[in-house]
Picture 1: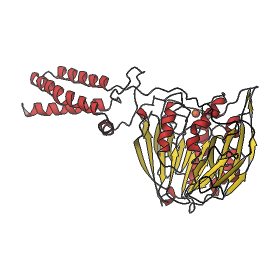
Picture 2: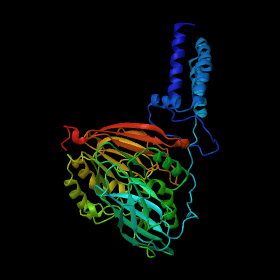
Picture 3: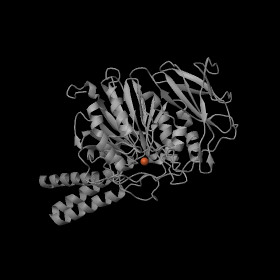
Picture 4: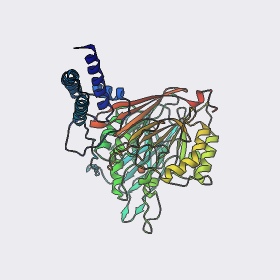
Length: 508
Ligand SMILES: [Fe+2]
């Protein structure tokens, strides 16, 4: 074989690799009967290849070797000898097309809602749907529901069954069309020691004991972050992965239960998340699925959300459960409301201005903001919505001037990470925007992306999953996005942050 033929063979092999690598397809795994959709992934072909080679896809390696090394090379050598350039091109394209078909991908389909009925062993006064949220630096709100009347009392201590402390709170309920909620209990306990496990029982019911761990007083702290959770088979595996992560606090950027007016689904969601939400503080903000407003017959928005998920808004000077802030372990977290007023003369805007002015970066070197509708988004879904565009227009300057490090959003059922950005351009002193609306809801994934990928978008993928933000110290944090395809948690995107407050180039 002449040297020119060897070179030609090498070039064709390389081209075949590139063609298949940039085709955004994956090898068929598992069920092949589902609807086929293209996967958008990082356009980096080396990433694509390594992803296939190192994430349990030996069949990909087999096909690559079989077709590209032996068959492809043999035919190309023959064609090179024949010196028919057109035929070479046609066959090489055919090979690439064949491989493209072989690696086409069946995206995981949406899974059905999980119904979590009340366990039969629970009595009408047994606590259920237990979840906790942080209140100030050393207190915790315990929220739970009983079917019938029961005392709003929490007994707690640092040893099982031995409860040295107790606290009482309030009970409420709400009506929604023909639905009447159970008794919703709300008790704040503390002061509590940081990074400490407490055991507690509720409504004097000795059949169920719960435990919780308080967040650490200082770094490091690990947040689990997940939006658009819903209650499907995908939600179940996402929750299982979060449960394995040893996180300190969960941040949820809206769209919790996907009850969508069917109030018993709020109860089902409460039971589904209780194993995790009763153990670690779950800090949430609202999404469009929480509005549940029906003209004339139920004109009050957020009825179920506000009644069931009381967040610490009073402590941060807010007059609404829809936006609030808190400090935890050196991080100032701001929860904003995408579905309440946000224009410059709104209460939320004025509250945000005042809240940002109060931040002491020596005490909280990091600022994280949470919204529902993303301000930056290159997915085809949810483009041009006022909750994204107008809220960004109103509030982006405030967050930028305050030196907010990260903005998490949900709403789009996929994952996307942008570079530091402000006013649609890369800016080293702007926040990193991350869309993490991929918890597992029943509407499925948002699979279509704008093409070409914008330069400010660093990584995007339509897969279920969740994220973990570990803030290590005042200057550095690491973000890991865990993909949830095939029910296995795989770290698919990692990014190291340096806090803006530690960057002398950013006047924070
Ligand atoms: Fe949403």
